[in-house]
Amino acid sequence: EAWASLALTATLYVGSLAVLHLSGGHWAAIILLAFALVRAFIVFHDAAHSSFFEKPEHNKTLGQVLQFFINYSLDEWNTVHNSHHAHFGDVTVKDSSLTIWFSEKELENAPWYLWLAHRIIRDPIFFYPLAGLFVFFLNKPAQHFPYRTLVPFLVWYFLGMQTLCAYFLAAWLGGSLGVACFHLQHHCNSPYRVPDDSSRTHLDAAIVGSTRIPLAWPLSVFSFGIEYHHIHHFDIRVPGYRLERCDAEGEAAGLWTRVNTVDWVRAIKSLCHSQFDGSSKASDAGGTPRFSSFWPYSALGLQDD
Image (tube, rainbow, N blue to C red; front, side, top):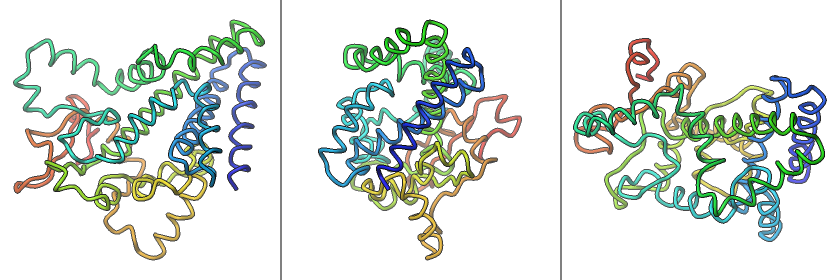
């Protein structure tokens, strides 16, 4: 099952790259390759968790290879992502994978230049492309440089400059889609945020704090099960190629009554979330925090109320 999933991932990547080259960088081929890169990243993510193969050494080798294709160092990913799983929901621990940082009250009291910078950067029209560019092309160049240059060099050498430019666009789009996925996994109302580690439970962080967003085929081919994020946070050893089956079995058993299941309408609205509503960023006696969108998105109903 693992090898079949890996073979399909490789076929989608190579086939998409071939279509990109033969089409002269057609926009549809760019989108197809972007989706193939998203799937490749999720396979990399599973390998980093040692869940794709049964043997740890096989997972390590797979992650070391894939880091050259997804523009991200395996060691750096392990540092950032393992902390996310260990502490998600505890607001006292910095979580670099989260995409909403400030409350409305904090922004009201912030200097004007910080407010303005946040308003521009965190506008959903700009945020996902900018974040995709930053995370997968600009962030920590010393750590990521070898993994961001080898494959592009080979594409340029064998396929030419036109294909290279289209490849970069696909990688940028894939990175932006990846950031949007990160956002939807933990930023749909109502979020799971607690004031400290003593208030946090692993079960609630998974079942309450991580979303379930079933996708139809063919999108599910490229999402590789990561849409069942509640299961992934409960047990990181469940590989992507088994998450859909695990979700179906759990649904039949009535296990997901507390899970935040998000449909397409709520997902689109949630993509516009940019701040914590009011002043609350963690659950307290007054209730749970909420996310909200900037005006005019909120006025247009692009906010998951």
